Image (cartoon, rainbow, N blue to C red):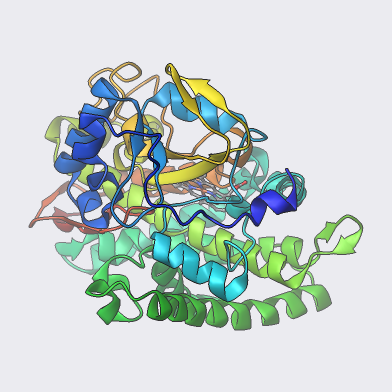
Length: 445
Ligand code: HEM
C-alpha cells in the first residue's frame, strides 16, 4: 500500500447519511467503545452477544468517534485480519476520539506520533517485522526458558515471603512479565519502575489510576491529552537513544542489539523506527501478559473445579490453562483495519476507506466456535482463541507470552497448598489493553 493512503486525513463528517445503525448497533455501540464497560465483563459480554446474534457486522456511529463497522464474529475477524493488502493498519489502527485524531493531524500532519509495527503496512511493516521475527520464534524463545523459569521462581518466592496474603495482580502479575521483557530488551532491573510507569501511561491511559495527568479523567482535553502522551514518549526516546548508542558500540545477546543494528533497504534503521520498535516491544510485551497471567489465576479462583484440576497436575494442565487464560481475559480488546477497496461480507458492503473494529473479546466468546464460551475451563482443548490476532500482524510475542505464563503457573501451582480470593477483584477501564487491576488473595505454601 502507498504512503499517501497512510497519510489520508480522517473525514470531518460524524454521520454518514447513507448508513443506518440497526437497533442492536444503536443500543450497544456506545458501550463497546467506553473504557469503563471493559471493566464490567457481564455488560461487555451482553453487548457483544447481542451484536453477534442480531447484527454481526454492525455499522456503528458512537458519540465522539468516527463511524466504523464492528466485526464481532470469530470467522469475520480472521477473514479481515488475513487480508493485509485489502485491510490495512496505517490510517486507523485503533479507536481514538475524533477530536484527538484531528488534534494529531493538526499538530503532526499525519495519523501517528510513532512508527510502530501495528501502525505500519507492507512493505515497511514486513521489513521491520522481519528484523526480529526470528528472535521471537519458538525454538529461539525456548533458549530463554531457564532464565524465565528463574524469574518465575523469584516472584513465587516473593509471594511466599509476603506471608499468607497479597494482591496477585499488583504484587506478582504486574512485575513478572515486565522483568521478562526488560531482560529480553536488556534493560537493567533498576530502571523497571520507570518503564512500568511509562508503559502503563501509554496503554492504560484511559484509567484514572494509571494516567500521568489525572485531570484528564474528567475532561476530554485534546491538547492536554496530546501533551501527556508526548511527555511519556519523550522519556522513552531519551532512554532508548542511549540504549541504541550503547548496543551499536557494544552488541549484546538481547533484542535491543537486533533493533539498534537493524538494516532496512541497506541502510541502518531510522531513529523514529528504532524508538518505535523498542516502545512496541516494551509496551506490548508487558501489560498484555500481566493481564492474562492475572486473568487466568482469577478464572481458576472463581471456578474451584478448574483450580482443583490445575493443582492436581500443574505441569500438564498449565499448557491448556495458559491459552484459556488468554482467551478468557482477551488482554487486547481491539485493533482496527481500513478497507482499501470495497468488500462484501455478511451481505453488506464495506466501502473503500471505511474502517472495521476487530472485536477480539467477542470473537473469543463466539458460540459457533467455542463450547460453553462463558465458562473458564482450564483444560479447554481445542482452543481457537483469537486473542493474538491473525494474519501479517499476528502477535510477534505470542510464543514468549505462552512460555512465561506456563512457567509461572507451573511454579505457583506446584508449590502453593491452597489459594483463594480474599476480596473483590477490580478491573482496568480501557478499551484497548486491559484486564485485572487488583486480585486480593489468601494462600498457604
Ligand atoms: C501484536 C496480543 C504478548 C509483541 C499483537 C496483536 C495482538 C496481540 C492482538 C495484533 C495482532 C493483529 O493485528 O492481528 C497479545 C496478547 C499477548 C501479547 C494477548 C499476551 C497474552 C506480547 C508479547 C510481546 C508482544 C509478550 C513481546 C514482544 C507484539 C508486537 C506486535 C504484537 C511487536 C505487533 C506485530 C505486528 O504488527 O506485526 N499482540 N500480545 N506481544 N504483539 Fe502481542
